[in-house]
Image (cartoon, rainbow over all chains, first blue to last red; front, side, top):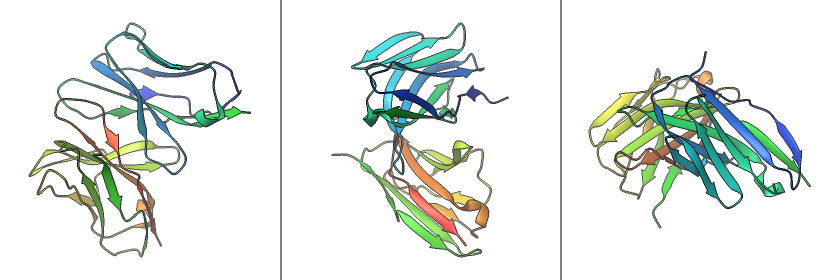
Length: 111
Length: 112
């Protein structure tokens, strides 16, 4: 079993829909949670960063961490075709600075 | 503006050749990482460094080496390229104890 599980999709939704992307993890030591967005043939770019539990909002994006369930989510409101990309979750904990990555979910927003 | 660059962006090489991929960052970050990304596998860590003269193996380090002689650069060397090393390679960096990593644009390597 992988430390971080993420459904690879693709997830296809109509423009304007609310999108929910999720990751589950097994290591209770994880404290730092990140979402990256990767456009085709580009490097991943940091989208959201959360420390420990709770919610964080940035414009149309909300990151949610539920440490009791070992479950993190990224919500995208009013989705746009420009949101079409692969979304990767990453997390870290303990004394090292490595990130443990999900496989990425490919998201397609249909106009 | 600070940035992280990779070169070359595309490379085709033959089996058995030595190849070096360059990574240069102007963030002045202590931590640098090399990943490969393949369909179905996501990002896999090859090597990483927490400072000058420090290098460590990641989960897929066989056939690869790195050296860190200054803060800005972490070149990745494929000692004897194999077809299984055809992939997209990403370099990333992060500052000190901060966990967020910032990525370069990637190098697409094809080994024929």
